[in-house]
Image (cartoon, rainbow, N blue to C red; front, side):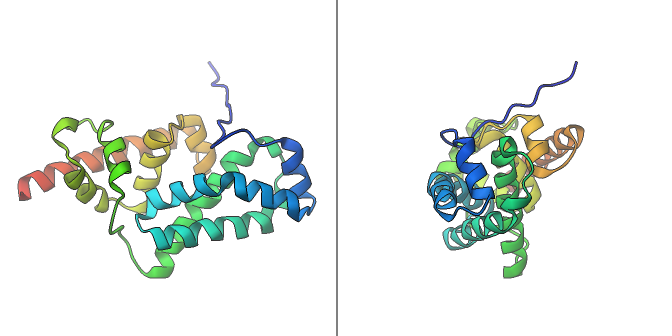
Amino acid sequence: MAERRRERPIGPALDRSLIDRARNGDLDAFEAIVRARMDAVYRLTNAILGDEADARDAAQETFVLAWRELPRLRDSEKFEAWLQRIAVNAARMTLRARGRRRVREIPSSQVDALAGHVATDPAGADAARLGAALERLDVDQRAILVLHHLDGRPLAELATILDIPVGTAKSRLFAARRALEQALRADEADG
């Protein structure tokens, strides 16, 4: 049975005419989009990067790239996933630019939200332990966990956002969960 793809907005649905106007170079329309999506893009980049300054840089870069590439967006219905893909890639570029391979700090509110989704004794996985375990994951593992468990994105949307097949998204989500569980077990053994 074919799974039907539905775009789930990252906030109140944007008026498609606003997106179309921005695609045609209307700066006022694009500024309205930025105002409507800045908080959501920042939350995503902050969840991936774990550093407020880096997250602000990545969010800003997301909108710079979006403005540059918006005329090439073929379907305004795909705008939400397209913008999130740019944000995830901007977070990756920020990590590369800083020469870091790991995230240093994870906001506790996001750690608490993710704790309920970890299969290995979530009740025992306090925020500090879970934060330390998440630091051991690479940015791709962290991105897929954040998009799925914190943003509530289904597999089909993960695939669209990350520009990968649905089966690959499912496999990467499974692997990221297992990596997080292993990191939690390793932290428990060390502690």
